[in-house]
Length: 153
Image (cartoon, rainbow, N blue to C red; front, side, top):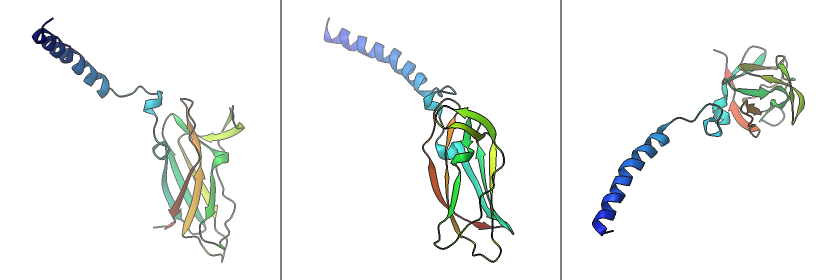
């Protein structure tokens, strides 16, 4: 085969293969595949941390196909010497998890209510921890965030 024929064959092969590869590359991953998984921050969006008159309210929105573990949500004050009331969470959906046993989960949204003690100092920052999974069978490592507490408007 001459160099000219090889070059023409190579160009023809590229003309066929590259557009097909570009189409495949541009396709969105199928729901449920590992490539389609959201980041933990996108799957479990912390949408607000607001001080009310007698509590701090922490809200998460949970994307479809994901869930948060009730037992894996925790909160503490960042400032030393500030003690917090016991966090109040709504009842979740009862599930049996192969790793954690009997658990409660949240699938769409959840609000944590952190009662404030009368006359006690109010934290300006909280350290929040949570953990959840995708229904596709992938669990995320625990997430920890330090957040500012906004006053109620």
